[in-house]
Image 1 (tube, rainbow, N blue to C red):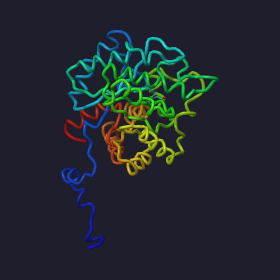
Image 2: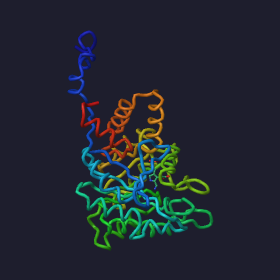
Image 3: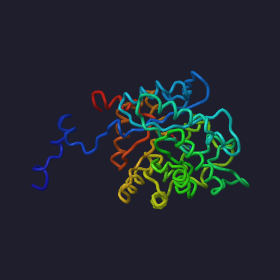
Length: 328
Ligand code: PBG
């Protein structure tokens, strides 16, 4: 009984019920994280042109937004802020009354029970659009650490449940852990964007967060796409510095990296299904070239099959709706 005609693998594919019974991977809304862009002002809901269905919201609209997201079974949001003004040192990032800090307060006061994750970076807040302090035309790693630590601390003070450093500076996890612990936030977890690649797939996000670098690019700090072993070194460093969860970003072009991190480490692993991955599907679906629901379900299932426990995705709301409905 080792081969055809005794073995017929098609037997277990005959009906939808049988296929679901033997499915090796299943998605649930509770493992999806919904990104939210927060902007100053009141009553503002700006759709992002390159990301149909995704908006910049002013803080006053977040109570309703949090309620809607939670009602779908989603357990967490990740916040990105667009400040009113930018400067050389990204002061808006660690302003106790900054747009993200206000947003944290509002969501934590809403009756939603959502976990609030915050992106800890300076690029949305610096006039030059880089993720750190620029000195002599370069991003100065060690001077940036202090500002990232201040930013993470201000998020924790505002009530953030998890801080997620994304700036790809060496030593940032240790700097943030030390600052949090010194201020009595030893229970706040760090989700490190450990293997974050310098990717063209971030294009639409930079429209949404108004954070495109004004000169140069991010290749001196974000990872080079050809490298996978180096991703394991990044993850290893972040874990050694105290990361509670690690991340691979983007997701779809880096499924091999997700799998390698999963096989080597036991920390919870997040994958970021980034803006460009979302916009490609939206654009093709709008033209009738792809079935959006099937495409998104297949992508998210593949990211999970590769080994991710948590998926950050702009499709979170739609996917959670589909999952709670008639099934994929
Ligand atoms: C940095 C940050 C970026 C993204 C998440 N955090 C942008 C970048 O590094 O240029 C990209 C997310 C996406 O493309 O969806 N604050």
